[in-house]
Amino acid sequence: MPLPFRDRTDAGAQLARKLLHYAGRNDVIVLGLPRGGVPVAYEVARELNAPLDVFLVRKLGLPGHEELAMGAIASGGVRVLNEEVVREFGVPPQVIERVTARESAELERREVMYRRGRPAPEVAGRIAIVVDDGLATGSTMRAAVAALRPLKPARIVVAVPVAAPSTCRELGMIVDEIVCAETPERFFAVGAWYDDFRQTSDDEIRRLLAGFARKAS
Image (cartoon, rainbow, N blue to C red):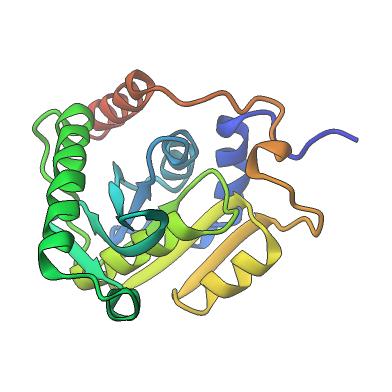
């Protein structure tokens, strides 16, 4: 049986068809999560005739248990802390600041690499459609949503081509709308649903963003 998506371009085109109720509106912005979410978001933004940008997120991993997020930082100077994790593990402020500084340096490096001087996206009062190439545990998307909320978008919409059913349900409880094009019960991994799931390069992200910016200007 053929897989649902040939590649991220095909996945973005299919996903866009489920978001056509946002087409042509002037209050929509499409935000791709680097790296793999950007080619998908490119197709969504193109079909909806909406602006495209990246939304950079860095998880603040708990030292010694880096897979556990004690918070996140994101584009626009946003930092969100998971107070429950901080309290439970007794994380002192200086540790939080040290991890934040390290991850901020990496986020800034990527901001410079991807944006080439363009400012962070303005999302206040807009419908922010946050796109990735799929959701397994959803930890990155949760961090993105948490970091996006203080920027006061009018509506947060999460949109992905494929997701684990439980992750799609759980994320749906913390956003205004969630669109998971495919939710296979036997999920395995995001890449299992693509014929071509090769890694997206930084050069490809720069090229897609630059091409979209030229087209919009």
